[in-house]
Image (cartoon, rainbow, N blue to C red):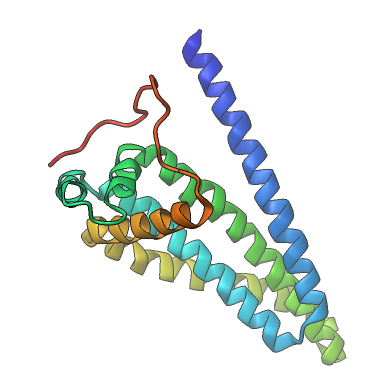
Length: 200
C-alpha cells in the first residue's frame, strides 16, 4: 500500500513538473520565435537540441557512474563530490528527470520549433506552400536525424566518461547551492536512500 502511495505521488510529481517545464519552455520559445528572425530561430532550435543531448548524457552517466571515486574526493573536501555521490545514489531519479522529463519535453519542443520555422520560410518563399507536406516532413526528419545522431555519440561518451561527467555536474550543483543558499542534494533526515550504493 505504501509503495502504491509513493508511486502515485511520484507520478503526479513527474506529470506536474513535465507540464510546468513544457508550458514555460513552449510559451517562451513561441514568443522568441515570433519576435526573432529566421536565423535566430534556427539557432534556438539547435540550442534546444543541444539541451536534449546534454541532459541525455547526464542521465546515462548517472546510471553508469560509481560512488568510489567521488567518496575519495568528498573525503578531501573537493567541491561537488558530495553532490556527485548523491547523483549516483539516486541515478534512477536523475535519469528520469534528465532523460524523460527534460529529454521528452525538449524533443517535443524541437519538433514544434521546426514546424514554426517551415511556416516562416513559407512566408518568405510563397512558392513552398504548394509542397507544404513535403517540406514539413523533410524538416522533421532532419531534426530527428540530428537529434538521434548526436545522442548516439553522446551515449558512448556518457558511458566511458561517466564519473568525470557526474563530477562536473556535481560542481555545478554545488555552485548553485552556494549561490542560492539552498541544498538540492541533501537527503532528508530519517529518510531512506532511493538508490542502491554502487561503490565499485
